[in-house]
Image 1 (spheres, rainbow, N blue to C red):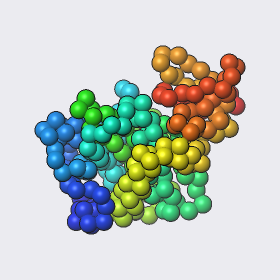
Image 2 (tube, rainbow, N blue to C red):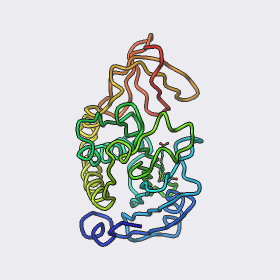
Image 3 (spheres, rainbow, N blue to C red):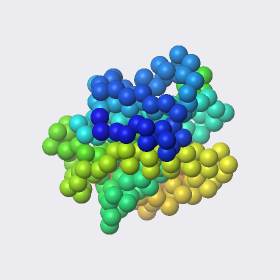
Length: 256
Ligand code: BTN
């Protein structure tokens, strides 16, 4: 794996790195380490390939050869589970800001609650899980040096990779150092001033002004996206007025 672990340990807030060639899921391994009482936190579990990479809900995550897949295990905290969407936004912002300099003149942003988008295609996904013992796991998959030619058919129209967009391979160590620096900063902001974090996420939200359909709590709603509110909710102007959504799967509606 072409990753300079010493540099990551030296230049970021990460205290331990566990590296795997192949693993089922870095999120599952991070949960296992938490259960075993991992002491050196924040720790990073990183893998070249995942045999059972997980996405949100029942989704799977394609870990294409050359992509980045890792999980950050954070110490148990008093961040309540309602803040999971704010942690997702902090992670999404951290990734978006880290990849932006690599993609000049491209529309890099986030889709609430947990996708990093370039144009209309998905570059990265985030899976935040809070364990019963209150450890927080932030799982991130970024399509970096992988090729869409290797992707499952259903992803070829919706996903993108840094390699596809630029024709260049990106330096994984430099990207991780930038991303983890952003993450540390945004997690501090989240504790100190969640509104500030939500405002930064709102700035980068590419769904604003689009007609969205959201499935949340078994219900489907459609409305014009008004961005992200100061408490991290997705705001939709529906027939019943402006509504806030704190969780759910949102998709851009075809009928614009
Ligand atoms: C999504 O877009 O639905 C979230 C995808 C999250 C994928 C990452 S890859 C590293 C970590 N390990 C997993 O099993 N999933 C996350």
